Length: 285
Ligand SMILES: [Zn+2]
Ligand SMILES: [Zn+2]
Image (tube, rainbow, N blue to C red; front, side, top):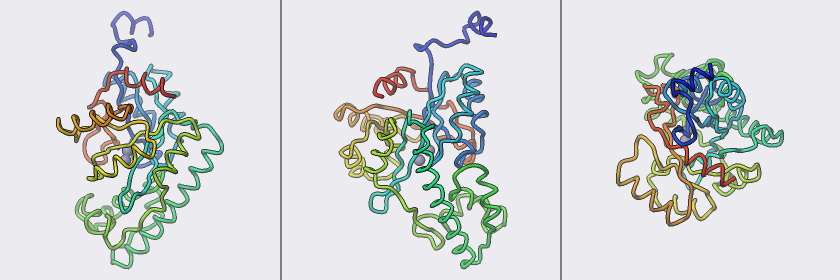
């Protein structure tokens, strides 16, 4: 098989390998298993893929096993939520020591808080006349970290809303009646946690916070890099982020943030980042 791949040029050398740094699996709020993610990455010509779940690292090992089998390099990562004012900030830790027992314990503590939060939101929804069963919400979360997407799905199933997004502007979006804030880390705590376990902290979707001051603040707090390439960034965004990276000597990553088609299409590989950026990340370890 390997020989045939070589003959047909399928085997990628580091120079012509591409990566999508940011994909979710069923271990958080994605719809695809780690194995499916890696398989699709291979089908779409990627040589490397970042397995990034919210507050969960369980998807990394199955992805790695599949990746070894079919020749896709898996970048282990976790996406942590933190808070600045009322802004929900996501920081990804690449190459975090995901097998470390202490880290796994800390992450399961974070997941317990998520479960508490889901329970509170279900109670608030009932008060609003939009009853969903916690059991169903947890079923939808599967082995992943339960969150608002699963509650939205349950609301849709129960017919309380007519489309997925309605859940967020009617019930569980920020400032909505059934919204419960997460108990979150500060960016400094998230960055330190990632560094303590030998990871590289990267600010996810920096422009989604609509707050450039926050980006500078996180840079000052010691972030190692920014997610520069995203499907929702235009040329001006790229210029702005690239100048931040250059001026502050940061790393650049990018990806589709694919949730397995939860919002429509399976985006894996719609952004292909040259492998040199993976190499730079590894070098920074
Ligand atoms: Zn995010
Ligand atoms: Zn994400």
